[in-house]
Amino acid sequence: QVQLVESGGGLVQAGGSLRLSCAASGLTLSYSTSAWFRQGPGKEREFVVAISGSGGRTSYADSVKGRFTISRDNAKNTVDLQMNMLKPEDTAVYYCAARVQVGITRVTTEYDFWGRGTQVTVSS
Image (cartoon, rainbow, N blue to C red; front, top):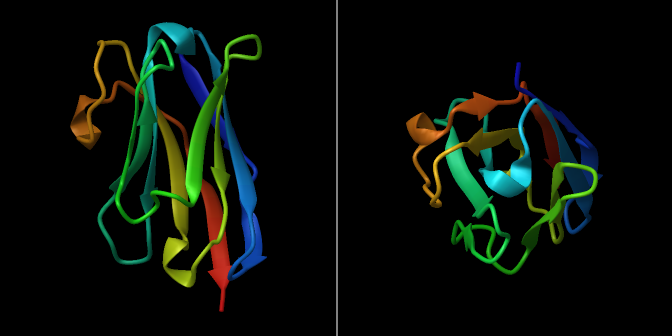
């Protein structure tokens, strides 16, 4: 049984930083494509960033490029999201996702496994 569990969310002031972590069990992330999505209040779930199984490829949404960084720790089987220069519009529930198929995609339905999410709130 595959489980993805996010942690690290919280409340931060605009301009601050947070680091999210997603721990996987039942799935080896280095053999999978991992991603972070987010869903703000009253909004659709949107793509944030993804990393390939090898870690050699990443893809960022334009809205977070230059501020967020995805990384993976193969020894811990985790994928992290370092978020800097946070803005109020980054406020959302952040979800970790993984897919067994090779290849980065920004489409939510193409991910096989999802975590329950962690709340990030950025105050102005």
